[in-house]
Image 1 (cartoon, rainbow, N blue to C red):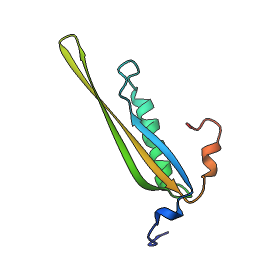
Image 2 (cartoon, rainbow, N blue to C red):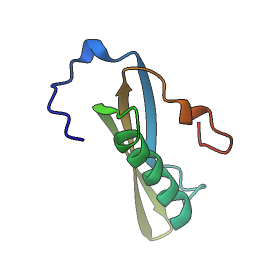
Image 3 (cartoon, rainbow, N blue to C red):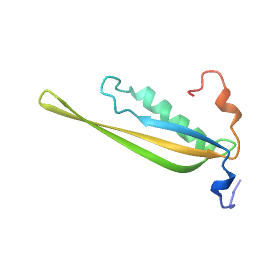
Length: 95
């Protein structure tokens, strides 16, 4: 289905924040955890009702561990929906 309708921010009634990554060096994400975050983002943008990206925040953490430097990034995507998707209430879904 091709939706050529332009989206207006006034249509947004529900916002879901989806984090991808981590800036906490004590909780380094596994590949599976990061993939789960990306899957959530993709579901918000592709499943019904289809969300629209209305903004994003990027946080960067820079840590010195001994002689090494660790740089971590977390991006929070703000996805707007015309209504709350029913699948957000599914058991096991990351809230």
